[in-house]
Length: 104
Length: 104
DNA sequence: GAATCAGATAAGTGTGTGCTTATGTGATGG
DNA sequence: CCATCACATAAGCACACACTTATCTGATTC
Image 1 (cartoon, rainbow over the protein chains, first blue to last red):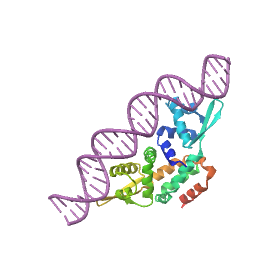
Image 2: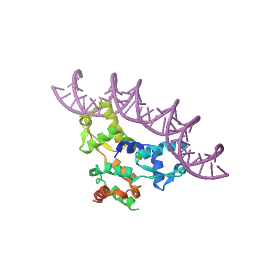
Image 3: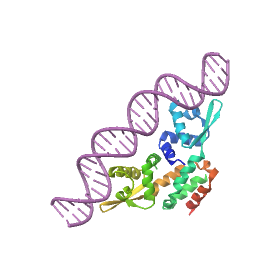
Image 4: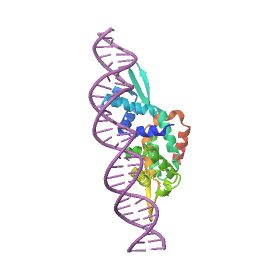
């Protein structure tokens, strides 16, 4: 349950973009790079950070490495957020939107 | 809804500690410093970051400034997380509580 | 109104971080 | 086997960031 690595990992917009892309479907590092204007080493480093934060996990597939979202990191984040649920109810309309989003 | 400022703000452990302390009860900057081994300017700067991320808000009280958790930032985070709901399933006990709270 | 207090801002500094180019590793294929 | 691939690692560099000390602002109190 390493909040620090998780928040640090997500603090970088490029990494959030990578995560978002992976959330839409697992793929390998080269596929991730497509349309992202990012060098191969940079991608590899970003994936390393996301992986050690358990936001992403890898699966070797021959000489490819398939990456996918690791629920573990998201769970840890949810736990962190749950500590502050006292502060959520204030704006119920927003919460309703949130639940709607979640239901899709 | 600037995810970037929110995640950047929470990436620093000192800032998360400040936020956590404020979540336990509103207080002014000096009270926040107690037991935290942090200089006055540093605290002020951290509060500035948290405030501009809308994780915290201030209320002038004479020559004191009372700080409290701003639900706005947490809401934005919840929205971000909601996008990845598909990946939450495995260990939901905590999350079910979370959603139950949201339903109120 | 001068001293004092809470807090913000300014300016400088060391460290962290994200990038780059270059090279390494390990699997595939001709 | 050796050329090529998908990817990781190494090393260096520019910039961001969290801190410091010093100073400023604006409200309170005597």
